[in-house]
Length: 290
Picture 1 (cartoon, one colour):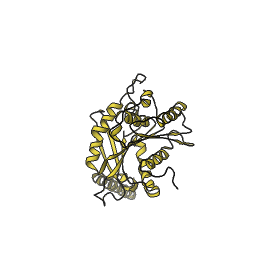
Picture 2: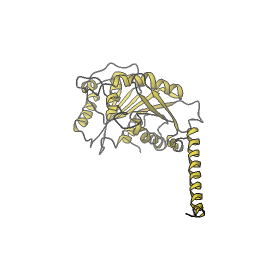
Picture 3: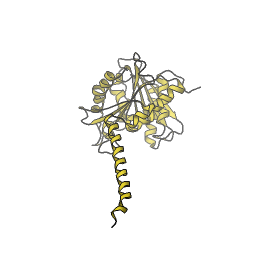
Picture 4: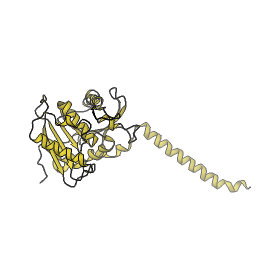
């Protein structure tokens, strides 16, 4: 074999290895500087932290979107929107809020996504965390009291100490099983959140608790909205949502209620519509844009 004939290929290999090493060094430098993909998405600009919950016994990934102009206006505090199922709802609704600010005149807010870090059942325990103990609860349900303690005693204090959050204007948003937890929060700790949106919520286990007459809370400005899509795939869930709206329309609870019908809305795809309707109602904007 002629050694000199191998020189060109050896040179190419050396150059390729050097290039890969250079790229690795650049990526390592970026990791050292904590550069993340979200840094390059201005509609999601904010913060991230991980919290190990003592009450739940598991960690959560917390994503935070700052209002536009947050750094330039240090004297202003903002409403805070807490999104359940933040793995999917945070990247969906955080930019949506910015667009509602632009087009509808909705006040800016700090958006907090509470994420599990994945959809795998080994990581994502929403079925347990978002369901209450009840006679008809399954073995993998009943964790709502612990999760609510996590919110009240761990997450909210951290958010309100780290950011310019207005504790009088907390909002909780949930979809499906997350909507169930929103209702659970409303009947067990009505004063904890100013506004709540339950989009196409589940009503079991323990359905009756959501129809019981409740004592008034300490506040008289609380709001609770339930949204239901006309094409909700589960007929019983749709029926329960409409029944809930009729029930509270003629009764007085700890909160002012609103039940909206999203024409043509499906179970999950119309969460932004529910969010828009709820936020417009909370902040006193007309029911539908001009």
